[in-house]
Length: 81
Image 1 (cartoon, rainbow, N blue to C red):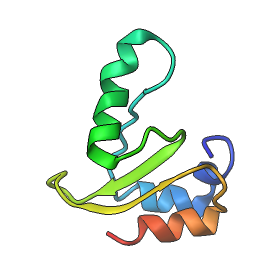
Image 2 (image 1 turned 90 degrees about the vertical axis):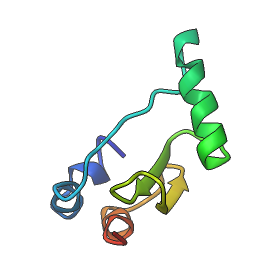
Image 3 (image 1 turned 30 degrees about the vertical axis):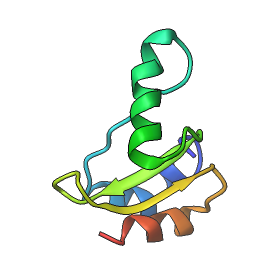
Image 4 (image 1 turned 60 degrees about the vertical axis):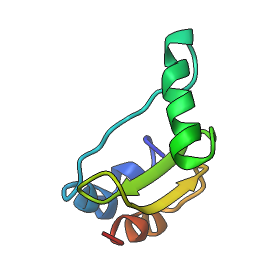
């Protein structure tokens, strides 16, 4: 996704309206807290995993795992805000 759809103009335009946060959940043991947080907050440890939250961070507007989105599909998910 980071080397494909994320680079499209449509997705970049939608990213411009958002704050991006990357949560590293795999790899070193220090990422365990992030993995535990993801599982508690979203009910999954899927990789990759995407979540769109409201400005307060309380309400999940959209969430999805996997990396099989086209640029158009992912941009549409980002527009739910």
